[in-house]
Length: 190
Image (tube, rainbow, N blue to C red; front, side, top):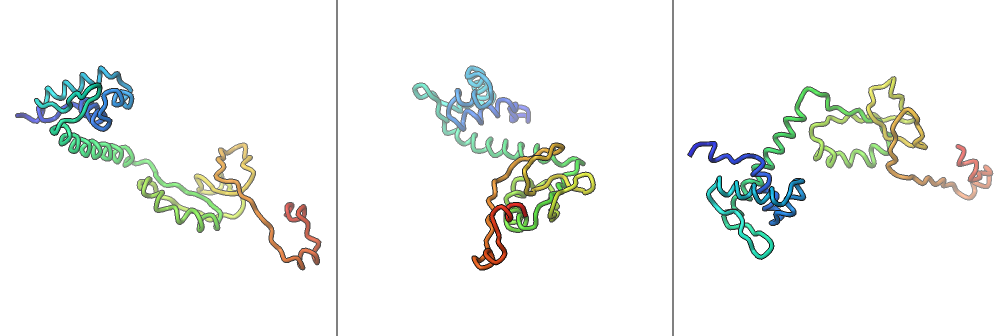
C-alpha cells in the first residue's frame, strides 16, 4: 500500500467525523451545509477507499460499526490536531498581538486580574498590557487600544459597549448628613 491509499481526502474525513458524531447523515449535512445525499455519497466513497463498512443502517438511522467507532476515535483526534495546528499557523505571523487596555484601578484589581487566567486560556497568542487610568482616556495621546471606564457611553468618535449598569450609593452617618446639610441632589452632582 502506498501513502495515497492510506490518506483519504479531507472532505471525506470531515463528512465522516460529522456523521459519526451525530450518527446521522441528516444532522451531519446540516452541520456542514451539505445535502444528506452528499454526506451519504462521501461516506460510501470513504468506505470504498478503506475497504471497510463504517456505518450500518438500523431502521431509519445509522450506527457506527465496530471499525467505524475505532476509526472515529482516531480521526476525531487527528482532525482536532490539524485544526489546532492550522489556527496556530494562522495566528503566528508577524502581526502584533499586543492589546493595551486602560481600566480603572478598582475594576482592574477586583474583576479584570482575577479573570486573566480564563482570558489567556482562550487567547494565548495575545499579550495584554493593562494600564491603570482614572478619568477619560485620550486614545490620540496614549498607546491605548481599548478602555474599560465609567460614563454615559456617549462618545461620538468611539465605539462603546456597555458591560454592566452600576448603582452607586452614598453612605454617610446621620450626624454628618445633618451637620453638612447633604441632600441626594447635591451628592448626585458631585
